[in-house]
Length: 208
Image (tube, rainbow, N blue to C red; front, top):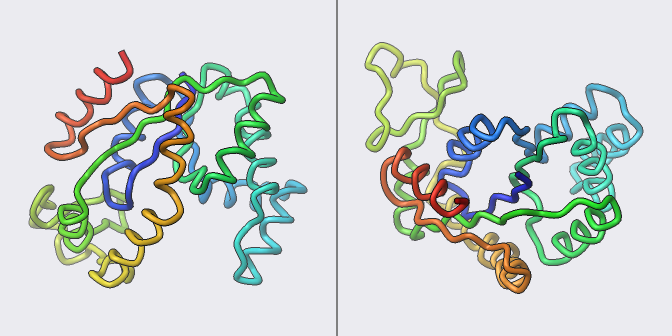
């Protein structure tokens, strides 16, 4: 199963992507994790990406796609992969398609998790992370155990202002890739509202 997972920030992609990766026994590939792993390993592309990141610049698309091609060629991706966080723009989607075609790799689905902007804002503002376990909680929708509340962290970018800025960026940059993939018959729309288990069931139905 070769998947791309897209959706607005705060839609719950992280939770669902982890479940999907476990279900299909495929790697969950986020660009951030991939960059860090390549930099740590000291690969040529990792060193190149590190140079841009240290200068506070975005890693060029050709470097990112080169790293993705290397990543999905690894043994654990032989059964498939789940891309999360890339592509974010139509040019990236076009370049990724060309690279995958050159490698003889065909996408199976592009999952689009849909959640209203008003609900996303409420989700993000109430989000808290556990620095010990890495678990993500929500003060209302997924309350943490009382004994760990004091150690939870509230990310600096989980504010109303930052949330709205990310939504604007998503609408401007990422939503144009939806018709790109719709034209290829790959988009699978999933309602992301409700309990995590319910959303997981809808995703399973969309992929059936």
